Amino acid sequence: MAAKSGKKERTAGGADTQQPRLPRHAYEHELFRLQAELVRLQEWVRTEGARLAVIFEGRDAAGKGSTIKRVTEYLNPRIARIAALPAPTERERTQWYFQRYIEHLPAGGQIVLFDRSWYNRAGVEHVMGFCTKEEYHRFLHQCPIFERLLVEEGILLRKYWFSVSDAEQERRFRARLEDPMRQWKLSAMDLESITRWEDYSRAKDEMFVHSDIPEAPWYVVESEDKRRARINMIAHLLSTVPYHDVQRVPLTLPHRPAPQGYVRAPREMQTYVPDHAATLITA
Image (cartoon, rainbow, N blue to C red):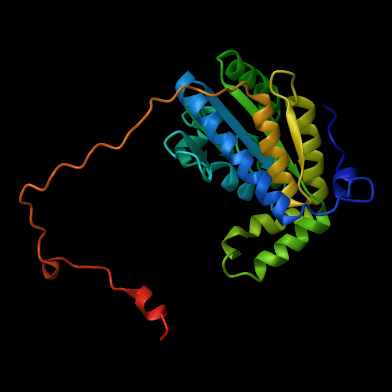
């Protein structure tokens, strides 16, 4: 897969790639169908003991988090979990770089969605100077080796890069600044990505050169329209996994036994949550 240049990514969503926004009714109908397929995929993973790891990377505000939310909406959190690691501790900084990610890899019957991953070293750590040049180049050398080992071990590894233009990213940043419910999504580090746009573009290109390998290729998700991005990413993920319907043990509700003298404790002996909902009912 050829890496996109920083210049091309800057104009993503231009005349050559611009498509009309996916209508909400079409989006919601297809999303629900795909989410039902994700439930089937989950049952296959659980029954077959498969291990699925999905990496979500890309620009800040490119739509990774909202896509992960739609992927997991109907899944069992005991089977499908999200790995979003914080900054490494002092102890973790002395470990082999990949070490802290290994413990979050899926066991048999599990799906793990990495909301950013070991590729932090090729992106923010490299651009912001949080790692040395030696550490950066060592990562570029070791990463494809590490991922080949995962694939050889039988882990289904999928890697998605969410691409968004600089104009759309800035629009989303401004929307977050003005929305008190989403301001937590912004940090000073996120805003640095505006002034370092081309630095991140070059870092992404270099990362693709080294880590876009046949065993674990990168898949680019055009994310100018978040609805399209979610649909396209989920549909593609499903198309790459050889899942099938599995036989579920049929369940039937048992008959409730006849009462045997139990008497519920008086209401006044327990502390109930106040009925706040009652204050919303108008006469």
